[in-house]
Length: 168
Image (tube, rainbow, N blue to C red; front, side):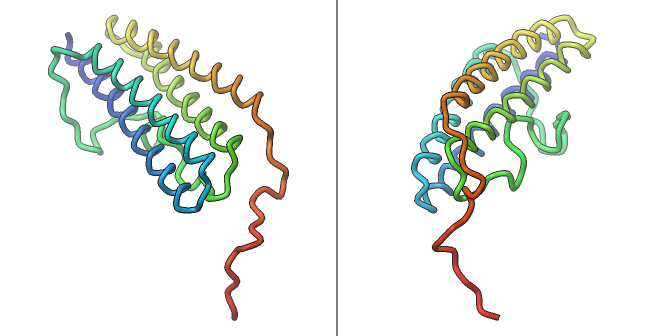
């Protein structure tokens, strides 16, 4: 395994692990706000990320991956591509919003792998990245089907009748 392959796999593994951690954090937040349906969806997304991470780990088995510091990662986004846009979650978000959030993450993950497949000068990285891009494309397609079966919320979905009032 070349150093470039090890570096690529370190990025792929970190992306999936970070995504799983972020989904768990979002699930915890939704549980605190008694939004159980969305919490369960985020737990499922964490599980899927861990499964994909396990797949990456099996590809890297027996190889010495570099232990990168947070600033040493080279993402095509400000954070790992599949962790979600900071501030994009809302405590009253619906299942449709959670799926849309996950879909955006998978699209960014696909773009990361597709960019690596197209831009690497290492044939093994190109092949691995193309394979992973294809897997992400399958995830995108599944999420698109799931969203199509999920009712889109009304425009007033974020109105909270119990919202705390602050006196001036």
